[in-house]
Length: 200
Length: 200
DNA sequence: GTCTATATACAGATAGAC
DNA sequence: GTCTATCTGTATATAGAC
Image 1 (cartoon, rainbow over the protein chains, first blue to last red):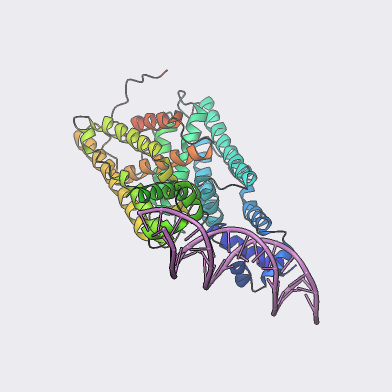
Image 2: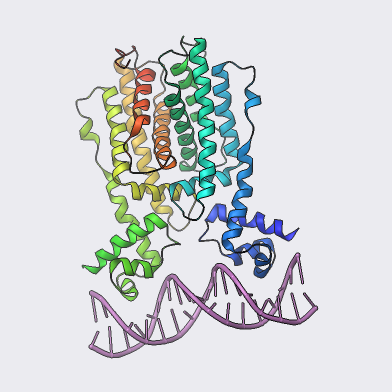
């Protein structure tokens, strides 16, 4: 099981950067230093290769993140989640790019993968909503907040920061000022009492 | 110049929904009710057709929006801009989807189109920054705001809301609660004095 | 300007030797 | 398991009639 892995790795990389249609099996074969025919020995079809490759590249999305939040107060938990999200995204920029492109264009024949991504997204969103809810009940956050809506906007902003990273040039950049700005605005928006104002 | 336009229209639609690679000229020809050969009479190559089609579909991005903001106070201007942005996006959902997919995947051979999109984005961002700056100077907004950073986060959030729309299902939806939430959070974050709180 | 017919290239996929 | 050689379909692009 040596060549199979090389094929899978090359395929993931190429599909991720170029998309399904633009990536030929000849290209995959060349990159993996095997013959085209070998790809068909290991995988039923180009489609099968594609699904397998993507499933592999999706695995890391299943990080268990809950334990990392233990013992933190709600605001710290949210800020930690923001950092974790961006960290994960930075480390899996290939897969993220690809999945996002699946969302934006509505490529067919892989609804299951998309479903899974959306499901994970929802889980993440619910986690934030729970934290917000707890924060409200503890009196740390404003009582007027609607947890679900607030969480949804936070997630949207996170994705927006991500897209922005794609927009303004080189990708594997550091979080940049946008993430800081997001965290600052979250403090101002969520906390019941204004923070010590330790910026200027 | 009848068939040329039909070709262009069909091509734009197909390229936009399916992408460049997945769209064959046979498909374009069928959709436009012309022969494949005619496409090559009107356009040098598939590539040429692609560029021409996209240039056409990009035109509406050049909306002149400034006049619509005249006479409004800074907060109203920003909220208006938010609405206009989403409105424009809703009405050009095809092109937006496509352009976003260009940003996410880094498709080659059309750097000029991308450049133009990014430039427009920057212009929009600067407009918001200017308004925030004015708001601060007028005393309507908090004096501690950094206009550029604040504007960048707002744009990021707008794009995030857009992506979210793609994520959770049917696309040509109404703004939904996310935009309202964004505008609410902007009031809370930007305004110097808390608003009359006309929600609960 | 618009068509039919065709050239040429390359894609995914198979056959069969080793 | 891995290869070379090949089949088959379809894509872009051209030739030439009308």
